Image (cartoon, rainbow, N blue to C red; front, side):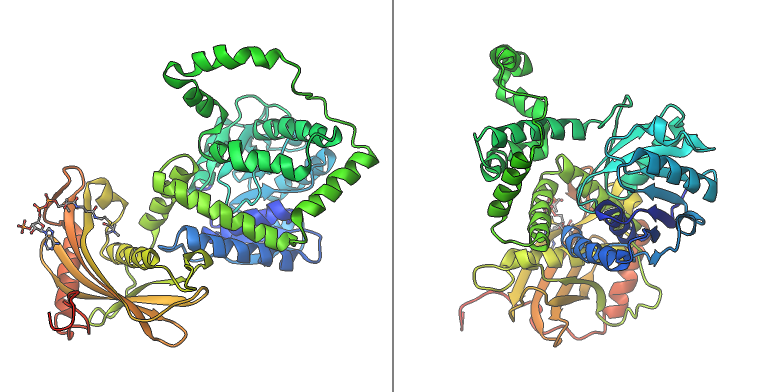
Length: 493
Ligand SMILES: CC(C)(COP(=O)([O-])OP(=O)(O)OC[C@H]1O[C@@H](n2cnc3c(N)ncnc32)[C@H](O)[C@@H]1OP(=O)(O)O)[C@@H](O)C(=O)NCCC(=O)NCCSC(=O)C[N+](C)(C)C
């Protein structure tokens, strides 16, 4: 099995296939995609544009160089030289069995083939393959480029090595693999979603609630807590200090009451009309594109919040961001160290704007923090150095706001080293608006080398120590930038 995936072959370019393409490309993997839809190129580019925008906001410190997208002319053309294949065809078992057998014949036998099926059994999907051991379900959720969950399910012939490889690979893409222990129609997540949906359709059918009222019942309540703890952990908390046993004793008897009807209602014309009309009213004319943008922005907000908590899907994101940072190139050879370094740039996201219509103040610190991270990467502070407890912490910051910046502006940061010793780096970051080069903010910072295991300041070591010394020497002749050393004071004081 491939140790490094450089090329992925995708078969099926609908919402799910295009979502996979975006996630893979943003991870620096080249993608060849086949779909008979003549609009595939435009559709994939649209999804990719949304994904780029989302990832720049989720991981502003930087991403790998984006992979290249190629529109393939056939299934075989898409997968022939792939290191990994993902099938995302419509949910028709006969079609999937047939195409998976073609993919199997066209790829190297060591290439893992993932299927995006949301509920078909992998044992049946692999039935036409000569190498069924490499077929595994990797069931993602829409939007694939933002939601981390991927259900992994093997068929009777799937090897353990394939399942493990798939879990490791999907993790490297920033996803959370969930192993489905036993092959089952609908796997885990769709079984839960279907149960809720059946009940929701009954509530509409019986005139108890509209589609909007049902969505409100979820999004203002349980849906918020599901996003980080799920059902069981939330009920455990609800059980108080006695936990789940108490919760089951208290609310278990209600489970015997005939509240829910898990047999779905007949989708009669009348019910379909009612659901569709209520759904149109609920959307209030907002287009699907706009709803997608709202969905993505809200997911980014949730994921970013959870990242701050290092919890649930936020921990997956934080781990992924750390892994990406460790893998980004430490230094470009052609950098002229005798000038301020240009190591970071970022667009200004719409949700960085405050009620005055410009970028709000804490986002400046975020951008300067990301700039410091870029500097630390440049200084070879990598995963090994961090794992050994070495790091620089910011101990002092002075930000000046010199000009406004608006949503969509592109900002470029430059960094000058004002001084350094064995434990300190004194830096001066300048932030310019790319459109006119105007300096909109500066940040002067003192970074202190810390042994994260003891939580005390101390000398740097190894390659980072040597690089700091060389960089400080190279920049020693630069004139101090305007504003360096400035303190906040009333005039004349
Ligand atoms: C751990 C900590 C940073 C320092 O704790 P300490 O070791 O107990 O600190 P000391 O007082 O003993 O100081 C050690 C030496 O450092 C010098 N120092 C301290 N502050 C400054 C300063 N502002 N300017 C210059 N020098 C300073 C001090 O003089 C001592 O020097 P000696 O030569 O006498 O040894 C502790 O303070 C701490 O944990 N602070 C919180 C840090 C933090 O959380 N920062 C925000 C994190 S955000 C970040 O780091 C972003 N990023 C870099 C990752 C992008």
